[in-house]
Image 1: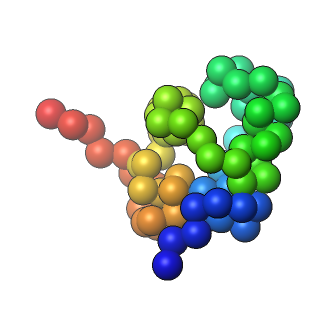
Image 2: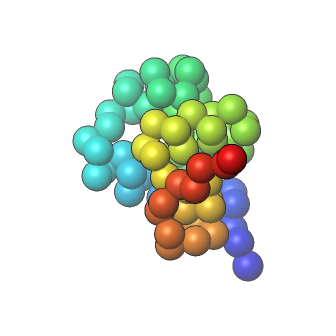
Length: 81
């Protein structure tokens, strides 16, 4: 079962992993997502994210949507034709 909410959600775990790997601070995350630092903090504690925020994260980190959502281990983002 996919857990999509809460601090232990696959999304939050993957986002924190990407942030660690890229040395992204919460301030930088705020710029990437267009959200306030407070909203980013809530997102990192499991609050729902909008489609626009998800797309910004996928594009910034150049990973597949399925990866950041925890639905796949494949990081590669496929291009639509």
